[in-house]
Length: 87
Image (cartoon, rainbow, N blue to C red; front, side):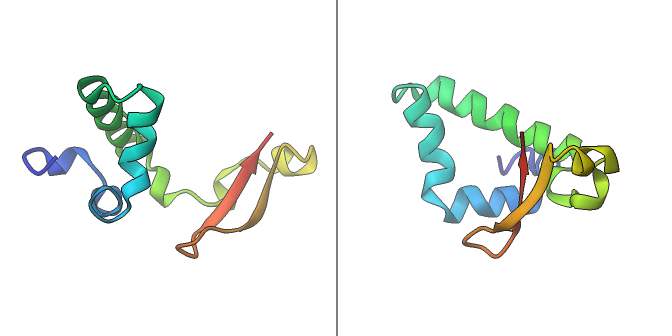
């Protein structure tokens, strides 16, 4: 990730460095296949950067989603970041 840090959002890089579960969930999903896990993590982090996931908020979703209760704010995670739930 260091070589291509422009491909990733800085807060995602920090999350990988400091939150063990960020990496562990990919390893668990892929039954400890390190190569496949790394590729999925790499793809996920690139997608998060290009999609601007870390810069999204409730106001980015169409109002109709809230009116239909298809999306709503449901609190904060352990890092005090807002959690938005999609049905």
